[in-house]
Image: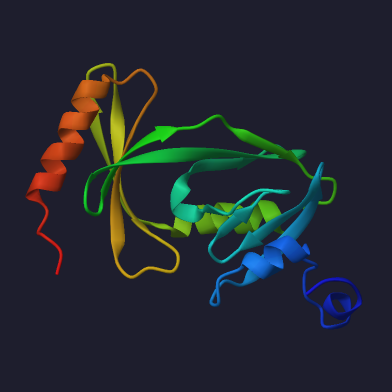
Length: 170
């Protein structure tokens, strides 16, 4: 919903491309103007200007520095069904002219996507072992996210070992 009706009904304005792509149970939470268009925060993730949704479970971290929202996305390699080894992507910086509730909404949803969090030390650093909710799906995904500099072979072995100990799906 955009324009006049959105303002009249007290809803956030949403670009048509995003509105048309929203899942049936996906709700718009907040929006903010960024260079290149509107940043849209939904119950399922962030829609960057002109981009595809980045789900809450695909975000390693998000920070707000009073001018820009900085989101670090991840890429996931499936180790076994329900178990992923993550790699941090290049941080995305969104300079928001009037951020409104966007920074708070993003921080809350990234945090809420994490069901459990455990730290393991490994050669060269360590990993976070996370259980996270995936928007639109039942159950959890187990993610192993190494710190920069952590031995990648050790991180992979840990992820494989964890996956081997998990019960098989239904």
